[in-house]
Structure formats: structure tokens, C-alpha cells
Image (cartoon, rainbow, N blue to C red; front, side):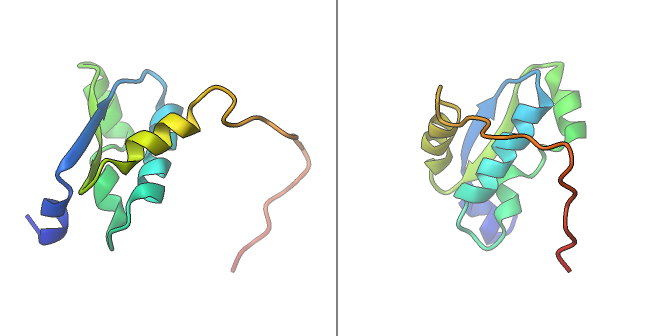
Amino acid sequence: MTTHHAACRFSVTIRTDDIAVLHMLRGLCQHCESGKYKQIAWGGTGADDWEEERKRGDLPLYRSGRPRQLSVTCRAFAPGAWLVVATDDNDPATPRR
């Protein structure tokens, strides 16, 4: 185990039947983690891992040196924390490179 992995000792286990929720939480992990290798925080939470673990119901989602994601997650999923402002069915993506 590397020093980076050892520093990620805090863990949150979630249960969800909706893989979209899992992916949103993984994005919050990326946002909350400040380490050099942010992907360590959500490692082992891919679609295959979720599908396999879903049979048991729980998936360790977040590993960090601090529990910041809990407060950010509560804010992000609180009623009224976000809303749809507009939709557009004719707005193609622009190449970035």
C-alpha cells in the first residue's frame, strides 16, 4: 500500500439502486479530494463493482483523510439545492482540443 492510499483511511458506504446516483457521488469525491491522486478516493466503485456489490446492497464509495464529502453531499442532494434552468435539444458539444 502506498502512502497516498494509506492516507485515505476514512470511508463512507452507500446503498443505491440507481447507478446515476453512484456516478454523481463519484464526481463529488473528485471535487472534495485534495490529494495528488484524487481517483484513489473513489477507486473500486465502477459500474462493474456496483453491479457485483449491489447484490449485497452496500458499496464503499469514498476514502479520504477527512470526511469533507459528507457535508458536500448533504448540500448537493438537499431539496432545492439544484434545479433545471433550461433544456436544449439542439446544442451540440464543441471540441475542446
